[in-house]
Image (cartoon, rainbow, N blue to C red):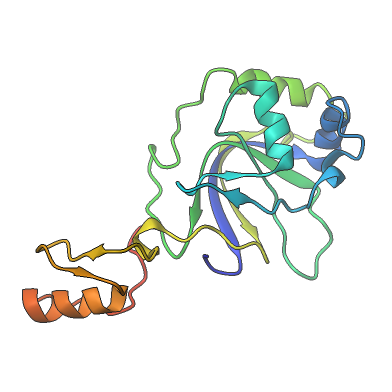
Length: 192
């Protein structure tokens, strides 16, 4: 499990929660975003892909498997009046190089239609409603997935020889001693 706060880099659109509530009510979620835990508490599959109840409604409406609802949350503040609907996102464990490919800039077919469908429920005059872009969102008290390189999988391969290990720190010590590297025993991932 990752840290206690979830940091997400996403590409998608920004929407008022009041607008999203109206959209969800039209899709048999009578309590809107209150139909589920807010901010969403994600369930991760074996590949680290996240899902939650409201994202599933958005996915069903668009047929885009990667759609994810992301909501900012900071302890001591009221619930955010904004939500983000992502077509591509990456959760950040410690540090990450953001590129046009990660999260991808390529908007999937059907996403613009989903955005327009949600925006039909807007009564806001704010310019930012429906704004598309790259956003960084912090959600406190929501752990993210553990990066693949930190998941304890047995055997853990050295990567430079055929030797295997049961603990990451033992692998790192071996790489330093046997292969002359100078790696930290419990280093943060370079891009996760």
